[in-house]
Amino acid sequence: QYAQAYQHLCRLHVKDGVPYCFSEVFLAEPLFKAHKKEFTRSAAASVLARIPGLKLSEARQKITIIGAGFTSAQSLNLNVGDSVAEVRRYACVDQSLIYFARLEFPTKFVKLEFDLLA
Image 1: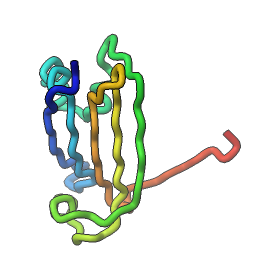
Image 2: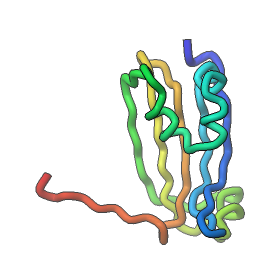
Image 3: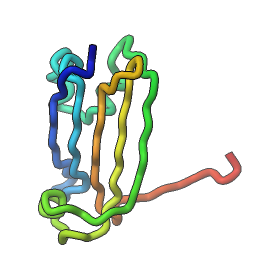
Image 4: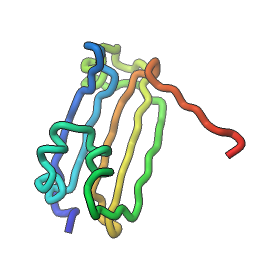
């Protein structure tokens, strides 16, 4: 049902005039069309979390330090190859991919904290 076609969104997130995230998102087209206004105004993951009745069967996130590519480096005011934290996320409903995102954050904005006793 969801995996016939996808809507591609590309966005630069900026706070106080400083770009901090370059993102590319692919959303199942029926889901995007049903919530177009929300997806064009807010981060896709937060919109997904607020959709009533949406039952995710799987959702994962992976963070890797990579070199910025040309488009993201230019958008984030970095040099090509500068270190960025690449975040890849996906979510499925009944084993159908409904959401895939690839985000790049300059490493100066990344902070990871873990409870080592948890």
